[in-house]
Structures are given as structure tokens and as C-alpha cells.
Image 1 (cartoon, rainbow, N blue to C red):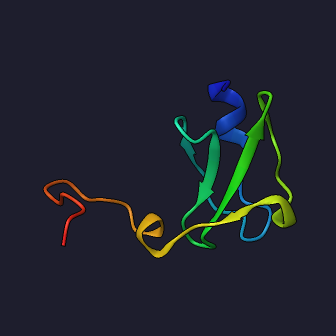
Image 2: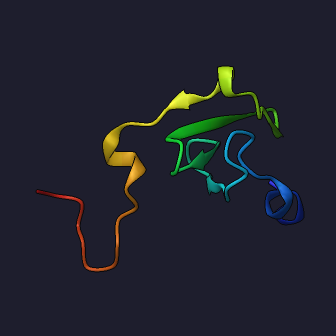
Length: 69
């Protein structure tokens, strides 16, 4: 994914920053809890095509936190 393109893209709902999940090929908005798919290298920025993120995905893991409870 092109870094310049990533820097320009924002969430279509809140205009917030998106985090690129390379492994899942998604752009994630942690504020709205939506993950926008990237299909064949093209971000699909339609809210109706986005996946609702789980509660554990919405909270980024901070340094020193293992993610285990």
C-alpha cells in the first residue's frame, strides 16, 4: 500500500486517522470501530462494506501490555 495514499485517507464517517493493518489488508478506524477492506490494492472506503471491529480490536495494545487478561 502506498504510504502517500495512506497518509491522505481518513475515515469517511468521522474524518479520523486510519491505521493500516497489513496482515488483514484493512484500514481501521478505532474511533468508529470499523475496518475498511483493501481489495486488490484498492481501499474500499464505504461504511456499508466495512467490518465492525470487536471490542478487543478497538483498544490498541500499549507497550508493556500483553493483551492477556
